[in-house]
Image (tube, rainbow over all chains, first blue to last red; front, top):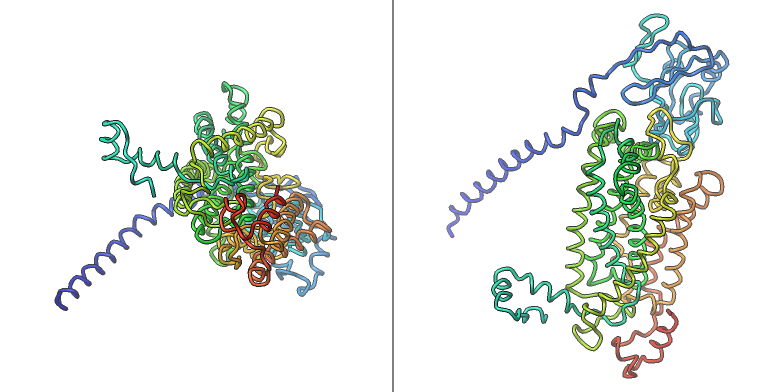
Length: 169
Length: 420
């Protein structure tokens, strides 16, 4: 076999393989992406909640994107407790001022950041939430204080549409 | 092998076999030389095949009545239980069949561990087996989600959230698995599809598993290489067929006990409450066969490391043939290994027990010690033991010690009687 002929074949093999790989990837991607959230799921992006009936010291749980959202109207004690915590005591340091812009209202996903269970209200060593699944304790700002969860409970995008209505998402 | 000499007696058989040698295959399977000292621990391969077929047949029938939709799944299962003719029976066989399948596979795996069946030249059989075991766990987990009860929903949430431990891409992977922002209808429909697919993948792997087995032939309680065919072997049919059949009957008695007398004892009452994304059950526990790994997951205080430890606990089995440095297969001739083997059995049972208990206080401590020991067994004890252990003399054949021809007669006979 001559040297020249071998090189020509090599080029053809490489070119064919490359085109084949691109073609395969172009077919595989739609097969993978079809599993991502579809348009109808994405369409449920925001929800409005009437919070007028909520009294201090109580929590309203609403469903947003299939996940529970805790809306807590905090008492002054809870706010003071959350704001007096030193940053160095926190596993995932976040100021309460940043988590609750309006200190009376704490809005966050009621989803434990460990493995996704719904933590229980007014439980645990820090007077906030306690996850029954694997024992994570959250404080009155929803911050992780003890247990396997790595982060604080997530604060979603939300705003007060008027004094009594919160729009989540 | 003698298979190649096989020629069907009839003209038609010859004509067919020349074109598709199915009769040669059938002849190979019936004549397949099997060590004559196989004990009842070797009957679980046949039992497992029965379990797989049972799950496929009952699963197909259930799929004719089940509706994979978040709004209707729970009701359709109740419909199967109350309205469908013999629906209760088929569903109870399928649900308990999963547990029976795992019971048999654990015995099968621990038999391999005792008699060193994973060692050369049977590594590929062993690795195929581990892949089958992994697929079984995936199939069982997804099947448990389908009734869309509280345990279904929250089990699915917790297990899929394991992937969120992966740095950077974890959250994206979880959303992709769910097809949404939480476990919901898209999750249910894809789990149903995969739950339907996996048993057939397992079936294909079982064929490879048996094919790979038929190359070197069965290991045996003495763990030595034997000549095939020879005085040390008997043909698979009728000897092993009858023995396997008898063991299968015994197994079916246990199976029937659960199906008819305690069909819900292995399940959780919470799964008869329809899935509710707002409330997590007070105590989430996986099915019994996953408990040891669940205990390992919970014993590590870090999320990512917990997931890594749990996966490693399973995947470490795949490299077992290279972690065990001893050339002697059977624990019968390994006095130290035999003791460590039983400690491992106890360790896994303890892990299973604490996996069902709340992860706090003494339970957590026990789980941590047992987890550490599990890895110690495979990563330290087994490699070291191969070099340090003084093994007992191994007989030259299965037949010789019995007939008195072996120089190791006394040792072999002594040890043989001990295992009974």
